[in-house]
Image (cartoon, rainbow, N blue to C red):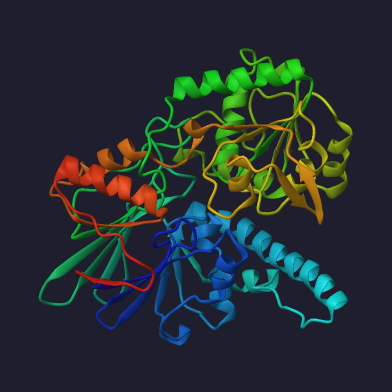
Length: 459
């Protein structure tokens, strides 16, 4: 078996790995690159082989940095199976269509600018129609179900505990003489998360591709995180402003809604209006309700309503979203995107970021080059809708709500293998990877490899 690292190598987004197993060619994830404009320009570079030579795609989970280029792959001619968990299949029906819509809008906005300058027009990376054409190719499987996807190639998914349907991928190749096994961690969740179950234990692997998003740090304890959130709500209530929470539509939003319901009285939330201003998050929450067997928290009703959160308003339409702008105090606004790279959060930032009574809470990883990262790093002003805005809002980073395991979680999960496999660290910035590499070496006497984009590894 041979693995070529096409994405998420020394970076967090764009997860994509080409696997050659005998004559078979398999793509493991096909994620979108997010961040700086020059980074996103690489989204057109999917494969190092012709699409016609690709036999199968395996998708670890539905987040766009893992799934977001699948419609582009189909646009370029791919028509084979896409294996993933049933819940990820359901989420992709929402997320990929939304992604296609955003690419259409981005191209429309850019072409207006280019028309004024007399420059050549651009086409979207892909469209909603491209996403629609991808959906029939999905083949959903359950956790623990072993499937022969190609002659001599078997796969199995295990619960990664990251978001609904997220999977650790086990892949075996039997060449007739011997069997090799690759394990891809996908994105690993952390133990005792509010909603998702703990990541499953995997016993054996010849080679492990291990994510490293938070490989150089420890999350704040969950109790401390809850106290921090309660303190922010109290300060914001005294200041008389609004709270903005950029949140990923799948995973982070559902965790947050659950916590708001659980701590409704303790955090004085009856004095707030809570707005879920993300059509995709609203529809994703309905998917969570349909797959309640995959988690233990009594979170949603069968109709997708959040239990014990009576002041929650879900705003699907543009007019409903715009009406929130009239609320100058007492609103908790949860909106996408989680890294502020687009979506309705831009409108709420425009209306609130220059107000010192505003509190802006980041509850997830902010990739280098994104607006969210610049705000977390303390930028003085930001450009929104073509106009500069001075940042006067209070910025908070609440790391304990991350859906990713921290260094301790990653090393402990690695320690569950019966025999320590060789490791390639992926899906992390270099500093995080170096930190995790040192921790694994110290604890287990293993020396991980940190591959560059385009590198190849054989097992």
